[in-house]
Image (cartoon, rainbow, N blue to C red):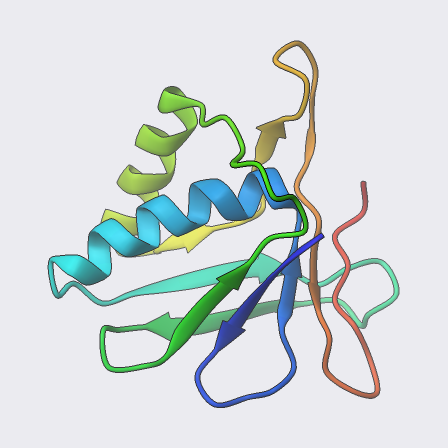
Length: 123
């Protein structure tokens, strides 16, 4: 699982490597243009119900850390879908499917490593 460090919070948001590779491209494109937007996800099965949303803007520090040394292959259709979502008033949502094997899709996994609970999207 890859990690996205947001702001000065030391606890990362943990996301499937393939999903984070797509998020990184969309986020970098938006922030390079000076565009702010929201990023949301549904809480995992071990969390009380609900969603989390963060506000992304160029002034807030952001770092992506991947488990794999090799870059993930990117799905251009998924990137377009994610970019369109990021441009919408509802913002980018990680509650979408990511093609893991170029054949079958499965839900993205998202976890916030904040004590005492973690956010995990059911696989």
